[in-house]
Length: 143
Image (tube, rainbow, N blue to C red):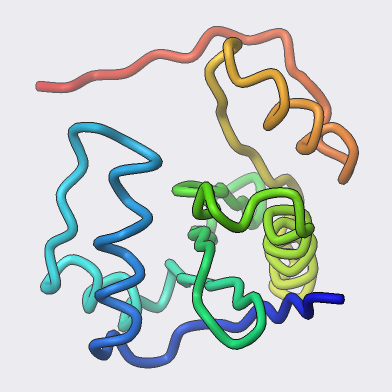
């Protein structure tokens, strides 16, 4: 049986950059893996990058952003992706569970993520680990 291990990235070395460059196109056709941006995420006090390893190889990643508001600590999950070749082994579930644990450890009152309605499998996974669909509008300013 394959073993999934989730770890927080502490340095944006070659292995992490190779993984980000391989995974990012599977998440977004327009995203670009910029080493300086990845390094700034890893070094950030508010953003953490986590990777999932399957039998030692990085096959998934997710970001956790934790930030204070006057209403309390909040969190957001972004950039959740697992390599197509490694899907079905529980990597995404393990990543999400680790992010939830980290958010709770940081006193986060609410943890949010967004997903396109067409991503039915992802939405089912999010709901299965405790995320609840909210009746809200999502707005984006792309100035």
